[in-house]
Image (tube, rainbow, N blue to C red; front, top):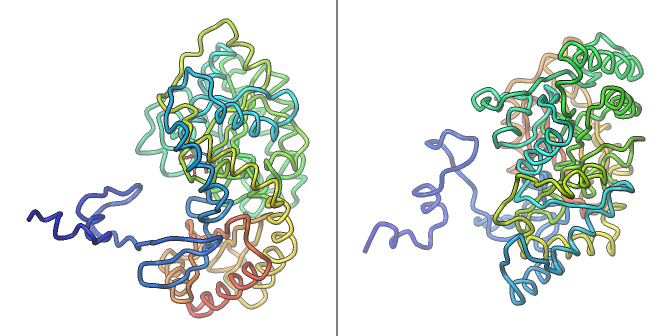
Length: 437
Ligand code: PLP
C-alpha cells in the first residue's frame, strides 16, 4: 500500500504531507485538528470544546454549523449545484437583493466575487474605468487582500514582498493612540488626518487619482475606530476633486460592529462598497462589490472587463440568502451590538485595572482590540514571545485567541451570548495573569 493509504484517516499526517498553508514557512507548522463546531464553540480532535474568540479570519459571524445555513446550502445543492455567471438564477438574484438592501439608498447592483481580495480588485478596476484615472490612495494601516492590486493597496508588511501593481499611494489615517499628527484629542486627530489626506491628493495631482479606498474600521491593522467625522471629511475632499470613495466592509460588515455595515455608524455615503466574510460567514466562499447607481450605470453600455467563473456561484448564494435571513430573524446584529456594549466593552476595559500591560482597549460590537505595551508611558509594544505566551495560556483554558503584533483581537461570532462573552473575558483575564502580564 502507498504511503498515503497508511495515513488516510490521519488528518494531521495528511496535512503535513500535502497541504501548503497561507502566510507561513511550512517546516515548523503544527496545525490543530478541528472536527466540528456549534455556535461559538469548536470541537478539537483531542476532545476539547473551545470557546472561539476569533471567528477564524474574523468571518464566522453567524457561528458554526448554523442549521438554517447548512440547510440552505443543502437545498441549493439538490436543486442546482453549479451554473455559470451569465444565467439568471433565483438564489443569485435573492442574494444580490438581500446584500444591496443593507447598503445606503441608491446602491442597487452587486458584482459577486469569490472573496474579499477580488472584491477590492474589481472595485478598484471599476473606479479606474469610471474616472479614467489611475491612482488608488489607501492607508498604511490597512489590509485589502492578497491579489495583485489588493495587496499593493494594503499598507502592512504583507505588501512589501508582493508590491508589483502600479498606481498605489499610501497615507496615514487616524490612530489617536499612536498619532502620526501629534494630536491629543479625536477632534485634532480627525482634522489633521484630513489635512494630511488633502495635501497628499494635491501633491499627487488630483486628476491622477481614481479612488480613495478605506476600510470602514481598519481590522487586521488594529481595530482602529475612526473619529466620528473622519469619513464625512474624506467624502467632502474626494467630492471636491472628483475622486471616488471605496469603502471596504469585508471584515467590518454584516454585524461585526453591531451594525449591518460599519459605515452605518458614520454620516457619509461612498461610491462603492466591498464585502465578503460575514455575508455568509464563509460557509461557501463569496464576496462582492456593491455599486452606487452612477458607477453601475457607467457600464450600462460599456463592457465591464472583469469576470469570474464562479461569480455568483449558487452554493455561495444559497448560503448568503440563508445567512441574511437568519441574521434578520434572530436579531443577530442587535445581539452583537448589545454584547459589545454590555459585556465585552466594560469587561475588557475592567482588565486594564489589574493588567498593567494593557495600553488601550477599543472597539464596538464583537470587534475589539486590546493593545499591550511593555510600558504605558512609552507605549513600547509588548514583545512577540509574551504575546504568544498569552495565546498558549488561553489554549490551556480552552479559549481560542487571535493575536496580531502586540494586540489581542477579541472578535467572537456575532451570536455569542452575554454569558459566553463574560466567560471568555474571564478566561482571557486568567491567561494574561498566567502569562505574567
Ligand atoms: N479586506 C479586508 C478589510 C480584510 O480584512 C480582508 C481579509 O482579511 C480582505 C479584504 C481580503 O479578503 P479575503 O481573504 O476573503 O480575500
